[in-house]
Structure formats: C-alpha cells, structure tokens
Amino acid sequence: EDQVTQSPEALRLQEGESSSLNCSYTVSGLRGLFWYRQDPGKGPEFLFTLYSAGEEKEKERLKATLTKKESFLHITAPKPEDSATYLCAVQGPGRSSASKIIFGSGTRLSIRP
Amino acid sequence: GAVVSQHPSWVICKSGTSVKIECRSLDFQATTMFWYRQFPKQSLMLMATSNEGSKATYEQGVEKDKFLINHASLTLSTLTVTSAHPEDSSFYICSATGTDYEQYFGPGTRLTVT
Image (cartoon, rainbow over the protein chains, first blue to last red):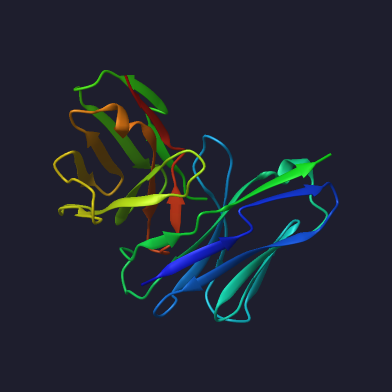
C-alpha cells in the first residue's frame, strides 16, 4: 500500500537556525513527489515537484532533494514568515492526470524571532 | 500561474440542510478535479476524483449519496453536502490538474454545521 510518512510532526527553530524536514515514502512506481506549504485556514501552496532520485530543486531559503526512499526539505536561515505546515505528497503510476496523490501528515514548522 | 478558486470561503448551515461548494479553475482547463477534506491539525484526505463529463470516483468510506460531485465543465466542479450533520463540519479543499499534471489547490471552504 502506498504510504507517506513525515517527520518530525512539529519543529520549532530560532530564526536563522537551519534544519531539514523528512518525507519517507513507499509507492509502487513513483511518478512525482510534491512539497506544499499550508498556512492555517488556507489551501496548500505548491512548492516543488521532484521526479527522480538525485533531483534537487531550490526556491529562496528552501531546497528539496529526493532519493529512492525519501525526500528532504532543507530550510536555510529561516525567517518567522517561513512558519507554516509543510506537506509532502506522492503520485503513483498512471498515464492520466487522474492519478491521485497521497499526502503525508505534515510537519508544523514554527520559527521564533 | 494556475489559479483555482472556491466559493464560498466559509459557510454555516443548519443540520439537515444541503450545502453546495464550487471549485473553479480560472486560467486553465481542468481535465480532473479532486475534492479533499481536512480536520484540524490533520492532513488532507482525498474524498473523490472527478473528470469532466463523467461520474466521480469516490474513495473508500466516502458516501457518494451524501457528497454529490458534479463536474459539468472543464472549469467548474461542485460538491454538495446533502443533509448535513455536525460531523460533516470540516475544511473542504479542491484541486485541479491541467495538461501539466500538476495539482493546483483552491483556498478551501470551511463548513460549520450547527
């Protein structure tokens, strides 16, 4: 069964303190791994898609990496505005856009000034 | 970028009534739309997948007669919660995919059933 596990469940950092969020996955034929940011009371905001092991993508203070079993979201010198829940999701095989994606439970990140 | 809207953003209804939530893709044609619900401090749970012009595919445990989904056009899908009860109170989020297969999410609709 396809599964996505995120850790830690919650993470509190001091402003400027770099860290990483983990996303472990089990899927029969990964089509894509996604990272989203979700603020309270809002829908998820797309950050990255990774397709194959070894791939890396960056956006401002965030960098996502992918291996065959897990993905990391590295956050460098975070600021208070980076506080949010970060969701990881995977999409299994399928030729159409109808392939559903499975979400992890998320990591609640809090950055203290 | 691709934009998905939802209406209303929040709604309060009485137990036993029905509520309709709209999901629109504003600047692209969505071949597939997905409906999720999210409880506080929990992740998104997929309820159903809908393709334009065909019946929705519901996830196991989701009552299709209670959560009616209509995908009438390539830019609009609706979710109707019929005979709502307090346990249906939740945050409902839709997403849409176009030709690039990326899922773009709407801002969500908070439903409170009293």
